[in-house]
Amino acid sequence: MNAPVCTRRDAVRQFSAISAITLVSGFGFGAGCIQSGASKLQVTARTFGTLSNGRAVQLYTLTNSQGHRVSVMDLGATITEWQVPDKAGKLDSIVIGGDTLEEFTRGVPSASVIGRYANRIRNARFTLDGKTYSVTANSGPHHIHGGREGFASKVWNSRGGSDSRRAWVELTYRSINGEEGYPGNLDVQVRYMLTETNTLEIDYRATTDQPTIVNLTNHAYFNLSGSGSALDHELQILGGHYTPSDSFLIPTGDVASVAGTPLDFTQPHRIGERIQQIQGPSGYDHNYILDTPPGKLRRAARVVDRASGRTLECLTDEPGVQLYTANHFSSLKHPKHGAFCLETQHYPDSPNLPQFPSTVVRPGKAYRSRTHFKAGLI
Image (tube, rainbow, N blue to C red):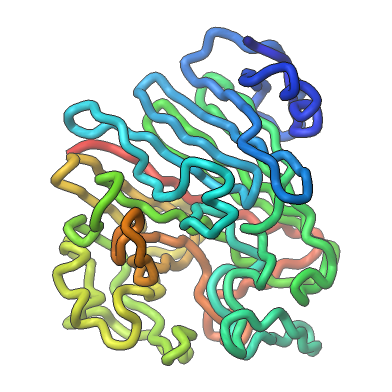
């Protein structure tokens, strides 16, 4: 059944009578609702479940004519699956997660938006324009991934649609002044877009009413086989340097070459080829500095899984990418090293390290970041 629906609020009123609806509108932000047409790029929406506080969580599914299906829920602006055919045409989700809302609320690995600041801030404080701000210490004395109730735990406002180029879902959230200790009211907009070239485009935007810091990413856990270990995946990262860190995985402020170390993925290597040589964390959890300057979309990494024949290319306009190899996984469904993350981002603890690219956002100048993940076959 097709229905001209714009926003999450409108959709909620109809979900009681409609189990699945098609949401279609123009690509421009703020475009009005129009009736669905016969497009190969489709968006459907349904209620995914209800939280303990009674709030309904909506799930949007984007599809293209190549058989790709991306589902996004408005809790955490989370990608719940990305179904991709392998070399034999078999579909698997290359994003690791859960099948039900209950699994996600119990803590299953989630491909959620991380903010207001992705990664770590030393001693859970930073100084901006001469004033020191204390943010939530949720990793010992330090701050990680936006705090105890970061963006990944919020229910975002949402709407979906499609045009001739993309099927999309747009999610918005207002982070109020003082939330988790951050200054300024921050209005955040994230748009996921699936194209006919099997690319998942992620577009982040944010504006503030007073100076603040922003570093957004998506914490997707990928496994191109759909399950099992990711250690046989071949990885290339177009970054010849990284930011060395201490025992808390917080940068020291130095920059070092990856040459001659197990961190060197400038040429393709199996993820598990040298993972036992990593000192400190029980796998990779390192911020790579990309070789080409930030600001323009360019290739950051490429992953190949020869077993399934699937490939994944990551492009971003960010200065760095954090490689994480699911070192904390420990269940049968999600075994240790059963996934990898490519978290496109500014560097960890940048607010306290002025030699790193700035993460300061000021009124009148919007934050903007783009990352594309393109799936393919060998």
